[in-house]
Amino acid sequence: MIRTSRIVARALAITALASPLVADPLTVDDDGPADFDSIQAAVDFASDGDVVLVAPGTYTSTDDQVVDLEGKRIHLAATIPGTAIIDGESFRRGVRCRNGETAKTVIEGFVVRNCRASWYDWNDNGAIDFWEYFGGGFWNRDGSSPTIRACLFDGNDAEYGGAILNGDENGSICRPTIVDCAFLDNGSSACLGGAIYNWGAEPEITDCQFIENRGFFGGAVLNFDGSRPEFRDCLFQANTAASDGGAMYNDASSPLVRGCIMEANAAGDEGGAVFNADPGSSAAIPEFIDCDFFSNVANGEGGAIHNFSTSPTLEGCSLRENVASIGGGMHSWNGSNPRLLDTQACGNTPDQIDGPWTDDGGNDIAPACEADCITDLDGDGSTSGADLGLLFVSWGSCGNCPADFNGDGIVDGKDLGVLFIGWGDCD
Image 1 (cartoon, rainbow, N blue to C red):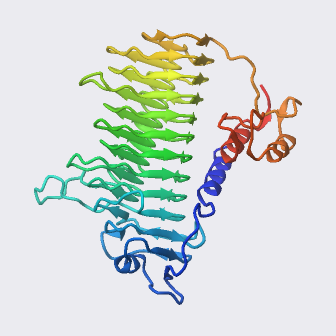
Image 2 (spheres, rainbow, N blue to C red):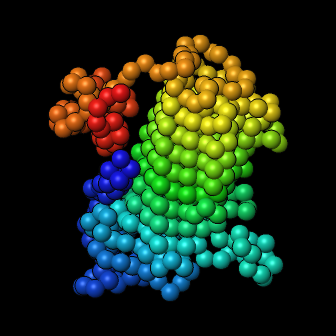
Image 3 (cartoon, rainbow, N blue to C red):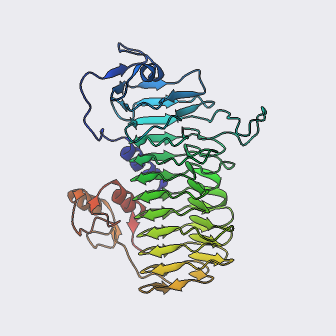
């Protein structure tokens, strides 16, 4: 199941370029005729408005990062998406933006792999502290807010943000746009935010997949210090936290999470999918709309969601078949009072919701879920090749079609992933 989803994620991450490129671009090829043989040399030469096309190959550097975009408004793109590899060789960062890059700085179609954050003397003491490693694959700081499109981040690591860190110690707000990207196997059991660490940041993250990332807090994502990220139509699957927040850890932050699937994530302690906390003020309000929390596991409390001193809102969500020691669906305490509207909690173990919550209406809380096999499109009692064929017949934009399992109006790779999750006989 997970292997199939990984293949789907890779296929989605390596898409055709989303926008046409202008004539007379600068070209890069590490072993063939081109204007430059390294990405950095092309960036150094480029001017605002230039397009830099990178041929298939593996690109690295002798510097602390493979690429520094230098604040330039350029479009850096792989000629064939998924074949130009930014490789940190396990001891340097992939990409750095530190000069106020805007959305007009675009990086598109790359694989960013094997990157490890280089040392940054955060406290200016001249000594290498174990925690001074930020953003293994990509670091946006000093307000930098580039566009990152159709990239695959695979096997990167850092103390903070295995694949990407947005933010810095200066309090500048980074607002990158991250779309159609896949994050696979990033982080480690000691990492904070296995894939992404948001530090007072406000990124927009759309149509991305987070699969098998690892962290101590936040297996896939950690939002910190008033971060207000927006996640739309993302998949969080099989991410793990050694402690809390298998998929996402929200510390005094107010993310908006809309239309996302959180499935088979796990926490060694609390919050199998999500851990929300704001012990300082209880002012942060995470918001979850039309999200599905399914089959997440916590060894402690809160199989899907754990709330500590914060009161998130859930609207149109489902908490199904999650497992914890207490609060299989959700656990809330220490002043938390989440608000639920049109939300389903069923089939969780040992209970559905533990702790206070406010019923805003339309909720369905039940010990068992009604039989629901949405992937059985032909109604024969199992999800099989026939259903796969029906899904492909509906591929693309659609109205209220049965193959649009996540209800986003499009039958695409995310629905294909849901179909493979349901493969086999219906229960």
